[in-house]
Amino acid sequence: MFDLRTLNDVLVRATGRGDHIVLMAQQSPESWTPISSTDLYGRVRALADVLLGWGVGKGDRVALLSENRWEWQVTDFAVLAIGGVDVPLYPTLTPEQIGYMLRDSAAKIVVVSSAEMYEKVRQAGEMPDLKYVVVMDEGTLEGAIPFADLMKDASAKQQRDAAFDVMVKTTRPEDLSTIIYTSGTTGEPKGVMLTHDNFASNLNYSTGSFPLSDRDTGISFLPLSHVTARHLDYALMCHGVTLAYCKKFDQLPAAMKVIRPTIFVAVPRVYEKIREAVEAKSSESPVKRRILSWALKVGREHQAETLSEKQPSGLGWKLANKLVFGKIREAFGGRTSIFISGGAPLGVDLAGWFADAGIPIYEGYGLTETSPVIALNYPGAMKLGSVGKPLENLQCRIAVDEEVEVKGPSVFVGYWKKDEETREAFTEDGWFKTGDIGNIDANGFLTITDRKKELLKTSGGKLIAPQPIENKLKADALVGHAAMVGDKHKFASVLISPNLAALKGWAKAQGVQENDAAALVKDARVVKAYQEIVDRVNRGLANFETIKRIHVVPDEWSVETEELTPSMKLKRRVIAKKYAREIADFYADEATSRA
Image (tube, rainbow, N blue to C red):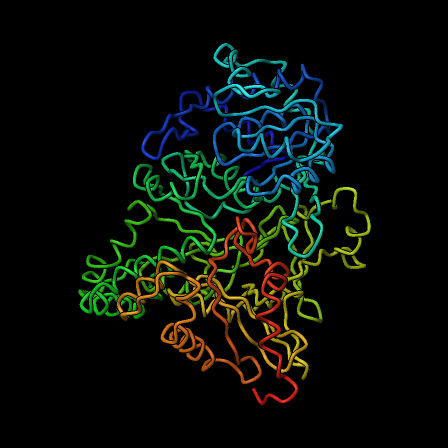
């Protein structure tokens, strides 16, 4: 447990460690440059002085539009040091979305990573409050200021400066620290206002039970625009962990080989991809398939030991560990001892698979509005399928309609310039309504079963929670994503976005010659394979939950094509609109159908 009052206390801890390496800057997938605590202090101080010179003061907004890199963290700390408010924006946003958020927040400055991001700002429309645009990449862009120019005095400012240090400490816990825009899955984005105390109170409790120290290393690759990644980086810095910034997700495998992190935090989709890669490799031959199946069976027999952090014993487990489990751990760099998942539901099937492989994944849960951690599994306090126990300084209750409600110092102060939406987010007695459906067991473990607004209600009045069923479908390597539909209809159906790499490998092995995705998903053998996946899942469901009709789309859903949020959650509204014709076909004969 820490004793933080503001996020500037994180800066003080991170910059007070002399020559200790705190950050690693990625020059290429194989090349990394260390940044010491002293280096960080000089860079933050240099940028803070520039911002003050530009007239940025207490409460002014500075936007960040960038992938993960050391300049992001320096900008964040510099803005907070002078009492400013930063506004992180996802690099995947469109110019129109960026323009809305810059205008809505009245940002005075935007710091972008590249010429591509700069061009998005240029196309974002008129922004009367915007005074300066800073670009992190080297080079000259008309109308933009190179980040490197702002760092010219950084080396000379590495010595502690009394005036700067006093300014850092004048920030109050109740001061606004950031405005984080929600991804807008259900409508217009809302700016979540988080104070220094919101973040600090959450950091004080979220990671204290993990055995972390200055001997540990982590890779920062989840987008820092997302509250989970940002909170995590602050927490790891407080523990003294060295952070390596990975700019792009496709560079992560190479980064893991070089950095070899001891702690790994990811959204479920990353773990899914690793599982898919393992299963795809095992499908290369019947022998490999049998070995993987045998090893996981052995691991399942020792799952209780794995989940309780005990080293399983026995000749069978040792052999399985050598032949299979050790190689799975090599995908994470070979040194990782702590695995954490957040940002979206992990799914009990996926969590169980990794537990069978000797890897306990500590799942957590939270929202942007809660800074973000509400609950988290820990070593010695873990329950598979749950999101752990709520933090000590948070109250958590289950409403009559099973919605999870929370109260505590990490709950946000409101939505930026949206008073009505803020009022609607809370109960009459002041509890924040998470929008998630869940339950708390006798031992205090919280389980999330679905989003309240995503529950499907059939025309017969039955409620179906789609996420657990979708997660079961995604446990098969051929399924990339699945979206159940059927609200107000007689029965449920599903749209399936394939894992095309796995599907093409399967198709080749089955003698299916089609290479074009659109033709491939229509092949009778492919349709039959996906129907069998759905049938297997259906056997474990109540009759009213079962999926009666399926459609495999030829598209791989992604953040870029806008079916997914940056935290890899389904944008159901977007999917429903994009595949309206296919959904209509599901129910064209509904009146007479016995399905």
